[in-house]
Amino acid sequence: MASQIANSAISKAAAVSSRSLESAKAFAATHGIGKAYDSLDDMLADPDIEAIYIALPHALHKGAILAALNAGKHVLCEKPMALNAGEVAEIAAHPRAKSLMITEGFMVRYQPQWEWIRAQIADGALGTVKQVTAFTALQLPPPAVDPARGTLAGDRSLLLDIGCYSVHLVRTIFNADPLRVSALIERDPVTGLETFIKASLDFGGRYADVIVSNVLRRGRRIHVLGSAGSLEIMTPIHTPPTGAKVLAALVGDGNADPVEQVFPSVEQYGLQMDDVSRHIRAGDQPRVTLANALRNARTLDAIVASAEAKGAWAEL
Amino acid sequence: MASQIANSAISKAAAVSSRSLESAKAFAATHGIGKAYDSLDDMLADPDIEAIYIALPHALHKGAILAALNAGKHVLCEKPMALNAGEVAEIAAHPRAKSLMITEGFMVRYQPQWEWIRAQIADGALGTVKQVTAFTALQLPPPAVDPARGTLAGDRSLLLDIGCYSVHLVRTIFNADPLRVSALIERDPVTGLETFIKASLDFGGRYADVIVSNVLRRGRRIHVLGSAGSLEIMTPIHTPPTGAKVLAALVGDGNADPVEQVFPSVEQYGLQMDDVSRHIRAGDQPRVTLANALRNARTLDAIVASAEAKGAWAEL
Image (cartoon, rainbow over the protein chains, first blue to last red):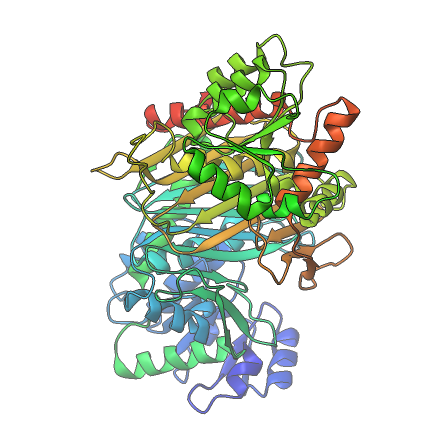
């Protein structure tokens, strides 16, 4: 992120804060950032800072966002913005939540492939989208546990860390929220952490299936099936340097093989930050609004609730 | 099929039967078949005939199979062998069912890609297979209704005609049968025929999701996610002339992109018929046994039962 901001003509990284002044200074030196703080509150008191980018562990997001709002700063917070919908609602209830910009860092939304996909759907090239299936199966190294903080609740959650992407993207595709969710979650018997999540989202006769695992190797796809066309998104979240590939079978293709659409790899974090900067100047909200973050959190909460109820449908 | 048999050194099409002698003769002339009959019973009485291949409408399968068994003929019957598990059980109960060969025509099993896929799974290259997702979304022309016979029950069923493939293939991948099934079926309000089928199959903590539609366009894939690798089968049923492609990410690949495996296009109907011929000579059963057909039919029946119970799990 810092290196991508350094390439921007719009956004400027003015200061960095860390618990250790030494590491803050080292980071600032590496990325050409003018100021370094060893306290978030001190940085928030700096009148030169207009907005903060929060990349703390998930469990610390809400507190940092509220502190930023108290200090009158705009906020770009890494996904997920908070641990659950209750926390997002608490943020939304802050008196400054409407006058300041608050957005959730789904950098994926700044990829050209996702602009193209959204345009295809909005233009009706897929007809009615009926079924979306999103896989994210990847083997992750064991999460690093910060010896100073220990394990923070929510920070090793597969659903929050990885599942939030799929839920956000299928909601983006449908441009709607599910009405109800049925899910199962398998957990590591020792750590209690999720290893396999399988959720069916019912958008009112239109469906998404979300599968997330960190013990299965390796599939990352989103399939979109519509009445007039289908898309297979080969690299839905992280685009390889060779670009993002979508296999598209659109109306008029008949039963022909899908056509490859290739989109350039971009500095998605930098594009996101520039969009955020423009919206701060315009005084409005960027594409991932606080309301959207709240709805994403509600869906994630419903997945947990359904899994705890052995897959019984959880209404949103 | 007939043209593929003509290329075989092992199998020979000796006779053809149709309701009209004229059309039987025309077919026989086209494909170099020696005899033509206007009655199945007359053809079955022909001592030169060792086995029959049944390509009648589904609803007529059971009767034709029983007639063949009565006449002492081996049987290759197009999938599905019968309309439901009760009919397959009736066939299995025939006194000659054990001494004669009876097989269900899943020609797909004779593709080299499926031999390779089964070998990868059997050899453990995928580790434990945990999740399979099979799509078949295709737009079909309205089924031709035979004016002489009218619409035969089961013959315009999307589940029987297309869904049976996915169910057979996911059972083949797991080399097991689901313990229970949860499904929904949407039907055309006028004809009552299925337009969208969505089924979750629970293989005991391992899952398959099957999606079949004839109103969505166009996706045909099977994804296999395992603890050590994954496969994306790009053309699971009908192989294009350019060959069948599987994207494989196998153990040892780390997070590298999947590797393409390409398999030649083959005359799958001809290979099937030759395998059937060899098994007739050997006096044993080919790869799709009567027991397998019975289990496939039970799963299809459970999908219907669950859908009728609004998605409640149907045990097998």
